[in-house]
Amino acid sequence: MRASSDTLLYQEQHGVVQASLGDHGIDLHSPPQPQEPPTQSWWSFCTPKSAPSAPTFTGRFIPYHDIVWCERIESGVYTLRIVFEHRVVAQAVAMDADDDLSEKVLQMAYGESIIKPRVLVVVNPHGGKGHASHIYHKQVLPVLRAAHAQVTFIETKHAEHATEIAKDLEIANYDYIACCSGDGIPHEIVNGLYLRPDRKQAFDQIAITQLPCGSGNAMTWSTHATSDPVDATLSMLKSTRVKADAMAVTQLDLSGNPVTKLSFLTQTYGIIADADIGTEHLRWMGALRFDIATAKGILARATYPCDLYVDYACNDKRELVRASAPSASAPSHPKPEATDYTLRGPPLDKPVPSSWSKVAGTDKLNVLYAGKYPYISKDVLFFPTAQPDDGTIDLLLTSTEISVMDMNGMFSKVHTGEHIYHEKMGYSKVYSYRLVPRVHGTHYLSVDGESFPLETLQVEVLPQAVTVLVHPEGVNNAKFIRKT
Image (cartoon, rainbow, N blue to C red; front, top):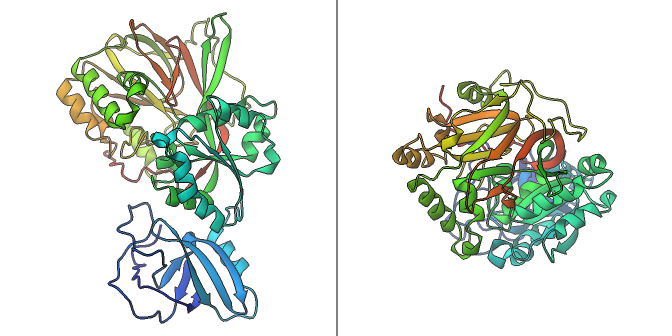
């Protein structure tokens, strides 16, 4: 993130500008006089302010982070491709040097990230209310072209198509898989790679990311801190590869055989699952469908009885908050070793180990939500202490013992993560859990936003199972208000 002292004054630029390389970016010398009043903004974790009317770069300092390409066009003169206020712009600069500086600029711009990455783009054409393909071609693709990325484009044709793509993929041909969709395509990609006999090699080779082209963009908010497709694509190009955890979700099929799928994001049971899966027919309403259905469940005092068994990593909220601080000297729990994809939990037809705990009060449970990333949607910091690679699952529980007024007040604080401080909310980190639903009627179980059978399921963390792309400053939980 740009330091607060790097104040930027933008003026309209034309032609070649004399410039020099700095430690953090390229300085422009004696820019032309402004043609219009300057604005002050630059892409960062903060929401950018108003963009200029014309797609022309303006400024006197260009951070390396925002440069996606540099090319010498003649001796001492270079063309820069820059992401500026949600668009790609070009700026010609003259730099005094006998040698070609373009390679040095690109090294400074990309750091440890891959220059000209090989990207498989998988688009769900039905995502984002049917606008995903348009968003990709108009906002994502221009950034990839400007960065000289090697792009392979595939549109999914049917359900589970992305799973088939990942399962049969020639993994040596790609560095990244960019899912231009909501949360469904990353779920399918992860499970397609998991089905491969060379799953470990596949997950090590290819980094998975999400670009916001759907209605649910939870992974984007947590890893790229934006819902803007241009800025998210820039973040993808400059991100750090992280060996992240996955969650193995096991249920029994109709024949009583265990079936395991991977979850990269969340599992939920109760009001929120019903509000999500149970309102699929109302997608035209956008996020409003979810808000209305959730409020209805809370007001109706709906309960979702179950038996819940948990293998705790840490069940002390104060300790979780302490350990989540950037300055924390020690984690809240022992971090398990990287997975070999062998499941460690007990068979579903056997009792859980004595070291697990049975959660009390689940006859009145109304929300069970488990996740690996801080955000579940824009401004919803549901799991503020979650980290993609800490070897645990964040587990949140509420019940009707919390009054309607308290419930509404609690969830009004999800934008800062303060909802977890309510004394009757359960919030912990776990290695595994087993959920046995005891609810009747038409209800749902959601995994990564996908409907799963409303049957017993067991979830265990698979440490460092997949490779994802995360902004160099880490996952986005900066808005979390920590209280001791």
